[in-house]
Image (tube, rainbow, N blue to C red):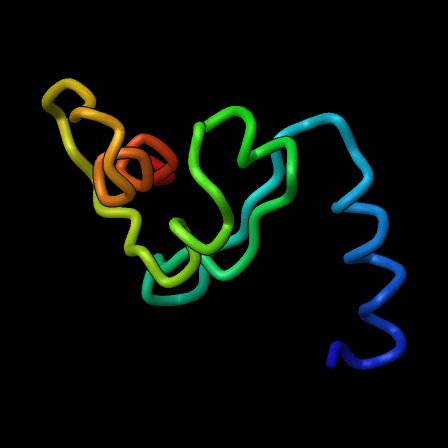
Length: 74
């Protein structure tokens, strides 16, 4: 259960039409909203915990690690 002061932020991020995701210090996806699910074609359950590793080759076949790699910050 989120802390009470974090819940309004999660509500705001969850209601935006823009894809939003967050990664932790190990570059693992820890949050993605419904718009991000639609954008990537994967559910939050597929993406949560997947590491965003930088890559220089083309995107893969749509599997969670390939999609997460496209979300990796530069």
